[in-house]
Length: 372
Image (cartoon, one colour):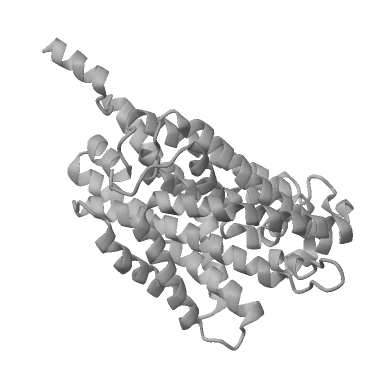
């Protein structure tokens, strides 16, 4: 396990909530309505089931190898060389964070600064995410604890706006475009919940191994609720057809918020809050990527790799030439990466079970000595 501090179950729940809602919250109503129509909110619930299944795999691995991160598990289960190759796949998946970087920079520029170049925004983001990743997992978790209540306030304002001006009858019929549409929406949302596989690099920082179930469970619940509510809000306000024409439905909803007679344009406050939370999510992913890469290279510290990894992610984020190509890449990612996220821990667990590999603890070490 690389240095980076320790976290408790509450901080784990906060980080998981942050990872689920960090970017998908902005686009969930549009994507879910595209596949499932009025039943888009059910697609979120179906997708969360993949999070439950993935969580079972992650927790099983963590209980077998409580002090090891992904690279440590892989080398112990698959051997040194195969373990490093499998960890490279994990690192490659983590580097898909460049899509989130580009998506969020587009979120800021398109509605608020349409004439501004993307370079300065990306540069500011690079400095922030590199600093967060360099600080370690404990610092990221503590910062997330401070800012997470603000997202709850934002969600309540959005929900209140939707209830006041929307029509909940628009989420009917309950099955929307049918079971097939709900299934496709669930697969799409499942890829977002699949990002939780990155916590295989973080579970080893838990102070108590047994906190993995409660921390993961509460994080999954608290992450699913905002996505479900914002999808209901978007469809009730704009209808399932209208919401599919909005690039970022959550921002469109926030633009409708009015506090009394004088406080308008609250989407500016909303976007500041989401900028902070998105930076925390990206910093978290960069941390997992650099820790894994440091393990592959057999370095004692991961910090020297933080800035090069962050710069690489930013350079990748600049490759798509248009916003439309960014959306196409995001759609490809969400449609086809769920099997990868299940395979990464699934293969390790199967091989570990077949080979009966387990991290030796104090009890098993004594038994081994007695057997000798």
